[in-house]
Amino acid sequence: MDIREYGQADIEVVLNKVRGIKKDIGTYQQHVFTDYGDYMVRLTNGSIRIYPEELQFSKELFHERLKDISFRFRNK
Image (tube, rainbow, N blue to C red; front, side):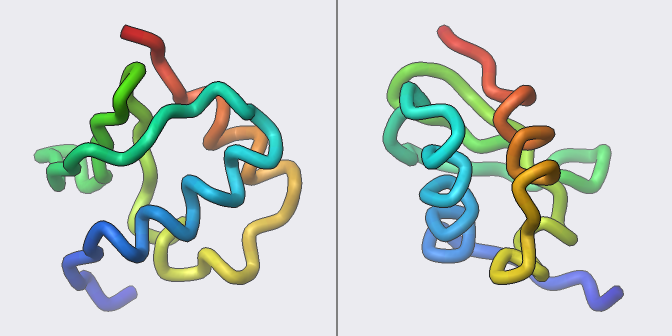
């Protein structure tokens, strides 16, 4: 897999899909690429971890994967 830096627009695509499952996910504020090779996204009401492959294949994320992502949401 090519490693590339994903930006806010890429992350917003995934967040919008995940909000279809978990409506209380807040608005994007900022993100960082972690030493673990994933993205930690700060939201207005918490944070969520997103893996690069979820961003790379955001158009092809199935319901079960979106549920997995939603379980990573942490309230403040």
